[in-house]
Image (cartoon, rainbow, N blue to C red):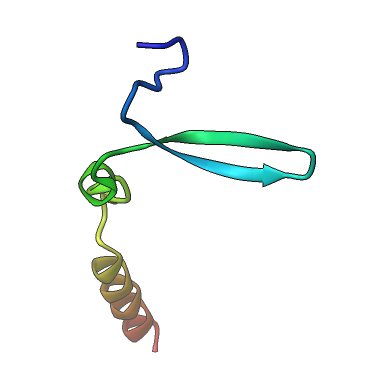
Length: 60
């Protein structure tokens, strides 16, 4: 492995930055599987909205 974690066969994103190219980061071989679950929340947004609505109803 190289010091930056990029190995032969890895796919990387290259960005044209005016007078030079930048290697942004190594892309995972399966992006969807790699990021699955990364945006999970401890509390469901739907449940938060339902609770908020119940509180509004009680106030009225």
